[in-house]
Image 1 (tube, rainbow, N blue to C red):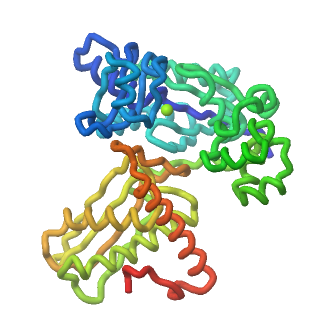
Image 2 (cartoon, protein in one colour):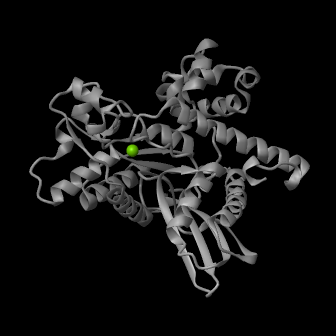
Image 3 (tube, helix red, strand yellow):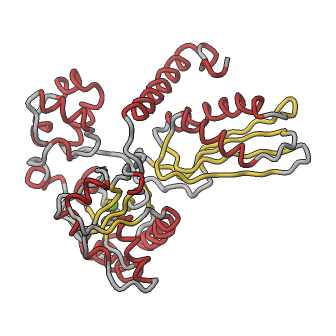
Length: 398
Ligand SMILES: [Mg+2]
């Protein structure tokens, strides 16, 4: 295969940087990136968590995901600011627009990171580093925030590289550098290794990425199923996944149905919405992608088409998530006129799951519930694949 050149570009402390830039533009005299500061949930509720932190805050031992009240104990002068998602989306868009000037194919994977396929770009730049510096400088000068750029021949290694020392840094991690730059790192830092997998690996005496690389893949598979093999490939720097152009919202995965008889009540609409959510999310899951935008569409008996969508700060492909949100959107959209057509759509796709950052400390039970729902979806998918669509149904549909 031809050698590829892939960049992974990641905004440094995105939420906090964007808030800082916004404040400076509106006349603030202090750059909150230079003082201990965080973006956090509501402290009056005593339950808000840290969503992003400045470097000076990090020096106080404050980390993302901890309760704001704990962070305040570590640093009483800490400044905390409320999240502003519309602002983040604005900056995210501007960030991607700049990236598109430099690469023919840009794949946005979350609000603040993207892969660029730079293969063949050596006609324009003498070195990959020169290209990366140009991008970094353009973003800094145009938008006033910094990024890390990871450079390699595949997505996995580029992503790992961008995570090395921050902020405002460029790192390479070519296959020849893996041993020196990646193998000494703890297993938890390897992309796709969750906390549970890391614990299991440690119990097996596997502590570093190098340990994974040198393990027998069959042994890893026996303990971690297919994830074990993926991790073994990753630890050895192998990843062939292409950089995929991210479709613009509201393109994506949708389904709609013209009803045999006009619907006139919410209770009639609900099972139709569930059916639509099931087919849409099933396709998302088959393609292993997640949606950040959910949209409900309807056509009423006067042939008026209306739609209503929401942009999530996480991405999902579980039926239950889609269904709960669709019902809410439907209630907000529908004025009571009889309905002839209903549709559900998922857009703004991401390849990796963007986790829901809880503004309030997540209760164990709600986390468990979401895990359960994912498992239920997977079980239903596989049964229906084997035995046909009508072989099994959700209890809520009966
Ligand atoms: Mg980032």
